[in-house]
Length: 77
Image (cartoon, rainbow, N blue to C red; front, side):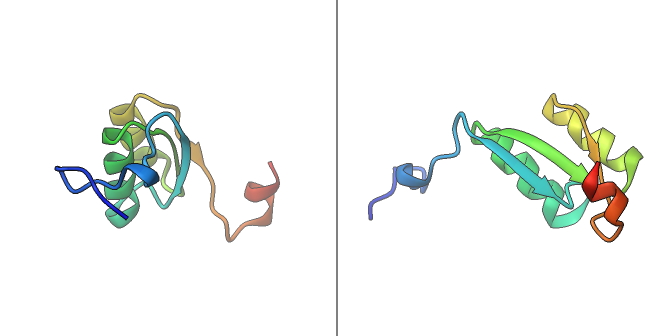
């Protein structure tokens, strides 16, 4: 498998794809959301903290999705 000059593997491109990132409100999830958006994905930012998730979503130009997967009602809506 060959990559591009900048180290990206073209066969795994996320450009133009929709990607759901859970835990996007902070840490690794936020970093992953930013990287995926920078690489051309349309990111759906999902997190528990409405304030932090909204901040990341605004940065990415999308709407936040506030969900706590530990709460069944959140998941089912």
